Length: 218
Ligand code: NI
Image (tube, rainbow, N blue to C red):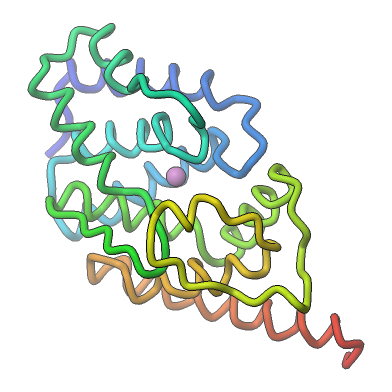
């Protein structure tokens, strides 16, 4: 089971486009995030199934229209790209639909991925948001947005609407409680659930030591 030659060409061209697009991104959503999400998604798909071409394309394109990176922009860059390489409207809509289900929108906001393809890309994106890589990306994002590392008086909030979640300017440590530590239990596939465990434990160890150091206990 592999991709057809035509599909391989499309994947390669898309990879090239996305790599250039995210080349100098400095909020943890750079090309190497996309690269890892694609590889994680394909690894999960080997066990869980799904259309490999759609999964790889959706993984490569998943951050192109993300709200965090597109303030004020209404136009779909995914649509523009896929149209430019001759994708049918039907296939374009299918990929946009998958990508649209991937993003996290707040602790109390349900974001359920329905197709197996969307479930897998969402799991892959969430795996890259936790563990050692997740910690590194979270502080990169906080720095990029001018946030404090931690403030003892600022308590985490469980956002119940996407609007509230979007507005937060809280210190980066809060993000672990508002999102990252919740992701382990929100994985869709069994494969991702297993992979999330070690990454989750690593964040717990990190946080424990962070607060011990903060209070000069060690
Ligand atoms: Ni992403």
